[in-house]
Image (tube, rainbow over all chains, first blue to last red; front, top):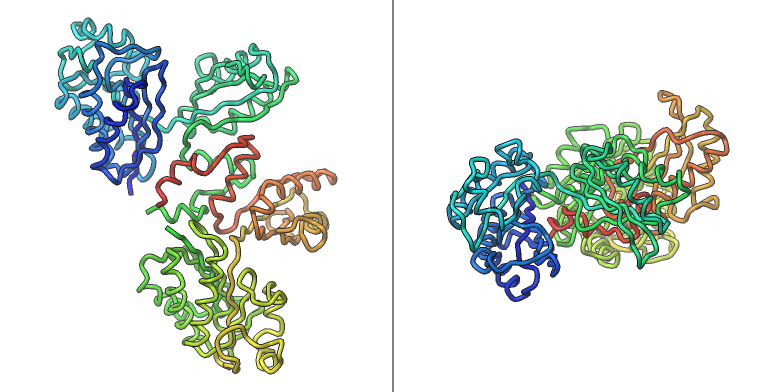
Length: 297
Length: 297
């Protein structure tokens, strides 16, 4: 079975009743599981994790998106997280039995359908981007909802699908396909945040580190520790163990050790294959050796 | 879904046609997967790995056992591995959604049915044992097929199910329930087999080591290495990483390091949970954080 994940970010994180109504749109798609709903009041934003068969997930996502667009009015939206529309970002992630190219096709098909149905501009990003300058989400979202009307007047702001007219209630939606993202934190046994900062700079791509690592230093006041907080955006290119062991030796120059690590949310089993190979020194280890793999059809 | 594994050991490892005929008995049970068939000519024995729903596996296993008993004649069987019958050992292993107690009930039910249908003595071992002295497989099998007729005349040799009479063609079958067994080898960068021997003695239960470890030293002539060859018989009690790290520090006293490890056959995903927790220092890691877990109903 081809399995697809979809993690829509919608611009409502405060009104629980409204969020419930939006999620109720999933009831017609029993094969699609809602694994997690994470609502943030400051951000006024909810991150929803959907998982299911590749043919059902885009249909469920369309129902969810239309329900959200029905109930969210961007003219009244305020929140600390950048956003461009009621359904802000919709990334599709290939999990099983499919390649990225197929997720890209699904993302673009979904984007065209949502754009036409909801009458909103659609921009494609990451692997689904049609223009190189739209690969990066932050670049596509620059100017946010408040700048969208002006953006749509400029040639470089024309959408990739849907309608080119400004929809004041719904804004726009950014749709894409990307590899699974792993949110991984390394907590260091020190209260000196500058150590977490300098290590974050050492491992992250932007400042010379590993290609698929985004990182920043964070103070954990309650724990009396500091944290290298990371997104590992492609575990095939930059595997988890390499980042952890690099942080370990970089911290050791300050006499600091790793107190503990945190895996936030979900990881694909494939990211653990290389962890087992490295730490247990089993060069030939394969997920086919995991019994449960044979229960997944 | 309740998922059960069953790993019958049958006394035919040479006649491929006969093995194929025996395996053909599984065709009426499409929900039961045959993950592996490992036939050994010296042993004249095949180890078959079945996986499927807990209600289907014993039925498939009964069909397989009757087909094997039909085609194997113990009066003509020779092989280097100890055996007591045509269908020598049938362990049931709970994999998912069930406890050991349930696997024990299934094993005993299967044993009674096989014993009555095939007219053979059945002995229950490990978690399914009805007598403490029958927990250990080697103890139950002592005397082998050749000693079975005499054994059945003695009070302490009476079977736990089936018929007490000697069946010269089929012998007896030993049926049990046990936790998953992990076959795990650690290869050391030395040609001195005595180092593998002494480390095997250090980690194995019999000589003072970890409770759930069976181990022996082996020379790997082709590789120019030696091996600590192990069965980890309960990864909850004695986790993989603890054995590997113990072998690492014991080897280091001889200036020897671990060249590589080997996982033979299959492991349940649960055995890797503690590996990830230990090496990545994620105390809270849970298999619920693995996306594929949510695809297993």
